[in-house]
Image (cartoon, rainbow, N blue to C red):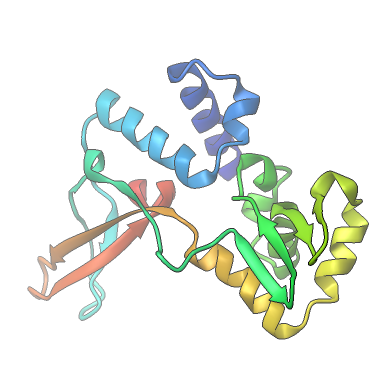
Length: 193
């Protein structure tokens, strides 16, 4: 299950990097994934064999991926500072295991996504002041988010869509039909599943 995998990854990274588990749980997910994949490449081997599905014939087969070549891809348009209107905006922090705790990682509902969005708002600012997250209750932030316009909500959603991620482009050829394709493998689960 996903929670067991998260706990195991947290313990492994904590042990190998001489960090407290609480520190590991606050790392941005892409940094945690990168660290874990590098540990995996040195301890188990540099090649992982995730399954892919041919876009032509639907055949499922394994491809070799050199885990040591995986990097963190950054979108040049990405920003943690999101201006919502004239002088008003939010500064975001990246989701970590801490934000994904309590079963949220297993829940793909819009409510779970909203919870993550709320947890990732680090500061709210206007033309005169910057307010830290700790200055607001969760209910205050929730009310703020629920009052966003569709356009503002899309701006914040874009933060998550463009944030850095562990990713590798893999070229492969289907052994069944010979179709050549390229896929992006992202996140720990994709490298091992």
